[in-house]
Length: 224
Image 1 (cartoon, rainbow, N blue to C red):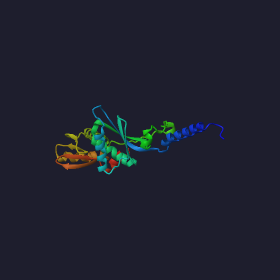
Image 2: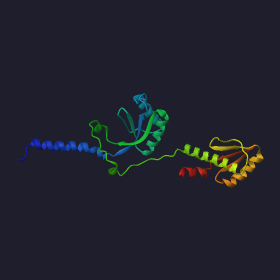
Image 3: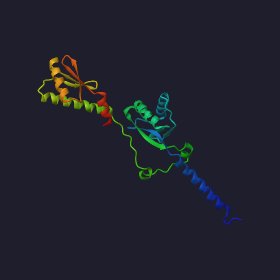
Image 4: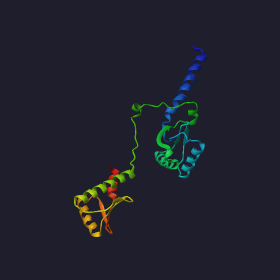
């Protein structure tokens, strides 16, 4: 014979079961995802847009493992971070500048648990071990900055050595310097190579010098 009524034991068992169910989401961890949101109210993320994105990704052999749509943002889950990074670039290219396409981490909780509001407990930064950043280099901007420096250095050096020159322009990831004739260009080439050895210069003929970014310089830009 038990000390307490059976209904009390049933309540305790029921509470334990409910507590266990709502604890399960914390065991699933997180998966990489791409978060999409619109910059304005006119850019709606309806089912047609989501389906077109998913179809485009499938054509690129990228599988979406899950979709979370809260009405304001859409989060597409992926199995690996490599797939996440590739998908982000593809989606951004497809949607254009009217949308924000960002990297995120979302819970891997199954849909049936999310449907009953069984969500994981979100820990603070101290308990999560800090915050992680993914930094990317805008190589186009870095190259533009390097070419601008080439233009400035070349102009300054030619002026300091009293060598007359014409237009100095940037063209197709290079700097083109025009002179009155080929002999003036050759004099300038000799002087520039002496004063600016880090710049790769080529005499193109017809009074034109061309400065290009070498592979070694490009590697330095990436590392810096």
